[in-house]
Image (cartoon, rainbow, N blue to C red; front, top):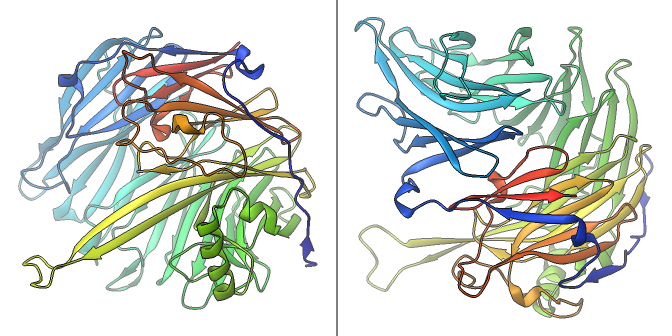
Amino acid sequence: MKKTIISIIFCGVMLTSFGQNFLDNISFEKGLKKAPSELYPHWKEQVIKNSETGHYIFRKEFSGTPGPGRMPKYRIEKYNNKLELENSYDFQAVKKGEKKNKRQEYAEFMFLNHDDLYLFSQVYMPKLRQNHLYVQTVNKETLQPNSDFKKIASLSYAKNTNFVYSKFTLNTSRDSSKFLIYPTYSKHEGRSEGGDMNLPLYVFDKNFTLLNETSIQLIPKTLQSYTVSNSGDITSYIYNHKKETYLIKCYFSDGKTQDYNIEEGKFISSLIVDSDNENIIISGLYSINDSRSLVKVGTGSFIIKINSKSKQIITEKYNEFDKDIITQYMTEKEHKTWSTQTKKHKSQSLFGSNVSDIVINNDGSTILIIEENITRTTVSTNNAGSLNGPDAHSTHSSNHIIAIKRLANGDIDWITKIPKKQYGFDLSSYYHIMNNDNLYFIFNDNPKNTNYKEGNELAYFSRVNNKKDGIISIVQINKEGQQSKGVLYKAKEEEAPLMIIPSKSNKISNKVHSLKTKTQFCKIIFN
């Protein structure tokens, strides 16, 4: 494949504050704030995909690994369109059966699809060395699970007890018409005592009727991930760390299987697999040198399109990054560090960046979203040592975003970089929205960045430093790749600032999105 090196098209960046034209068509609403006693500090919280009739939260009490004596409690909550708590239902895990055939039932997660609410529960049967996944609908008014409890997936681990508490994973196709369910083993290598293990994969329609069941062999010392397309095709990405090989394996809905090799000399550092109605789309970052490093290395971006009917690769493009887009918004110190890393890896690359999402447009074009995420661990001890060994402290920073738009034929239309710096985990990163050909990024920000101009140093946002003055910023990228930035929400002097949790924010409709904070729901509405 011929290598293409492109020049980056720099887009006009308009970083302004209040009164922007694009903000005139956007409104922001806050919901009712909950009392501190209702915050469930020791419960895991899953915000379920919201619907136009309400918002749902599934809470699970922290209990460690399921087992005897650890039967967690659960709570389902419904919030109305005024963002107020309307109803809730509490229940507990179930342990039943005789000693020989004892079973323990744990609710794992909930899912809202086509306005139906589903509860998934896993049943562990240690004596029989089996795990089963069940699904049942939930009454959206009372929030009580219905009696239509049915088994949809199974796992037998006769030769390896390390898989006793393996969980099942649910992946959804882009149009939510197909679902892929498979077990996630506790051992990453997938090796059993009796040899390589087989992984069962189940494909369902929107009503969770089984469409296809296949079994693939887990290969030791490999990283494997799986996605499902709108047509029900399964795509597996396999990286063999020992052999340094990359393989795309497709299990088509007609029962045929085909392998696709990544171009020789390309080391994939991060990718995402998705699909439109006709093609399987693989896009991500690659390095021209071996990327086996603690720091992700991205020399360029790529896209591969596989047609589901012909099963042929119809598009395959690799494009190296221009130095200017890599170094944009770097401080002098950061540029010096980057230069040192560049000499070490013998290439001009992005370091510490990962593919986070991809937007697939109706015209066949795509927008690949990349975010810089760096975790640093500091180990310290005193001269006398420590009874528990050295102290380790990790810090995480979530920084700049890069958006790469490719046309339907795979050629790059534009690349733009959004300046952002954040410390922490759950309040970092962003939530993105595609509306009327415009791409929006929403994230927590430091107010010092409100009137940021390129060439100045960005101020970091963090929960601690900005607990009294944090703001929610919004950046619009239009179809030409040009940026506009504004403040979506700034607290009044007597109010505590809002801090959104991007991972728990969801789409309600094409015009309305739910933004979750620690204490309440908020809504962003496009007029």
